[in-house]
Image (cartoon, rainbow, N blue to C red; front, side, top):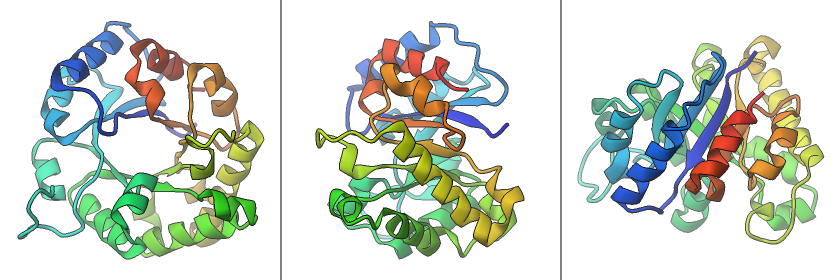
Length: 253
């Protein structure tokens, strides 16, 4: 079975003390993830070392950065390089989250550069893709997401592609009052896998974990994760509540 992942994206939330308690509360639940399960916490930069230390004894738990710069090093005040993340033992990094694309105008070319830098530093990119409301309303979501994947990932070889995790975000259904159905989630995940199959073949495509990032919560996690091509979730708000995220971890298939 493909790796099934519950990834928490804290975004710009929690003080150091709150983050420490949140992690501690989740670890106290004494979860026993299956061998094909992984739990990832994407925490703000100041908390990476603390978080890594707290989960160091948990083989199924890992820490992710929320971003990195697209250049290796240089005069980029306030930015964080992939090599810096590698030097403190970080194994994952989000790339191209919808908020980074929208608020910071990150381009597909920049994201491709980030992917390369992370892979050079033995960090697994969690590549985010997804369509906004106007694209969904015009029924162009498949073309939009396919372009995002091709522009940022298709320069990779098949062997290298196996080191990528993809997270699909239906941006139109996050904070808008609109709801993406489980069927819509599965439909897009299946399309993403078909795009990967066309480029790399089914043997590669069937090994790549594709996470769902559309307001996953305890009440819908089992149903969503049960879909054939959904391999877990990239969880925002619900990951900030220990009890909720614990239930989401338990919902992994």
